[in-house]
Length: 154
Image (cartoon, rainbow, N blue to C red; front, side):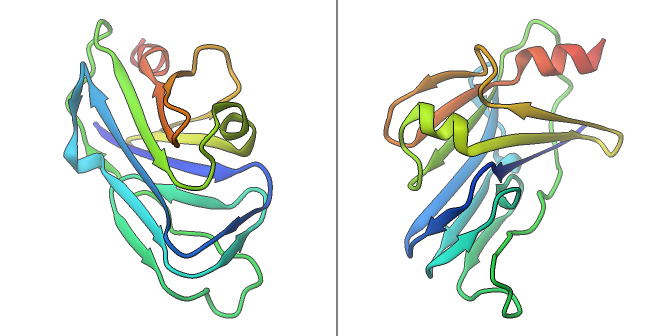
């Protein structure tokens, strides 16, 4: 099974040099290194509502705006192979960012899209109950994907 995740903006955002986002999944507490994705922003940029800000499976350093466009968008996820998920396994997406550190604002600022293989994808509102299971208020969040995987496996 291949997995990819992408975080999209729900409102316009301004990014400053040294802003960054990291994503990866864990299965029963074990990180899956192939899913690691990181976007480092090395210049000020504006992202409009609905734009992709980060994704799993690749590392990007954004040094210049794209083709004179007013608003920037990063590239898609690079799907990574993950082990088959058994219904009793806990699947969490780890998100770390330097842009939105407070959980309530994070929930209102982003939406998550996951892709399994080429056929199955889901959009996950972060405002849904029990989606964000843990946050440190320092830009680190755990998103519980267990129920999504159970639904997709059935």
